[in-house]
Image (cartoon, rainbow, N blue to C red; front, side, top):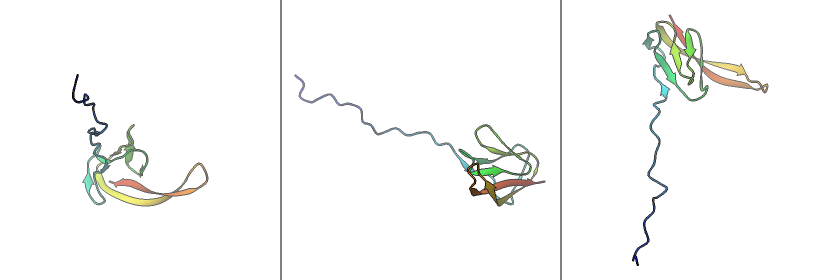
Length: 91
């Protein structure tokens, strides 16, 4: 008979790969068309002038220019107003 019980695996020891999200180009920086400005999960930052959104909520520059951030109050579907940050590219 075995002296020790067979050791099972622990529930620890696993971790997900990094997603590298966040702001990639900050205000005042020059960008080229198609560059990634922000990688995000959900709409933390909203697209503004001369930007577009990818299917994974990544905001890209549509034209060459300078990045600019601004605050805006948007009306949500439930009637509340929400402050959000909008990303623009000034050509």
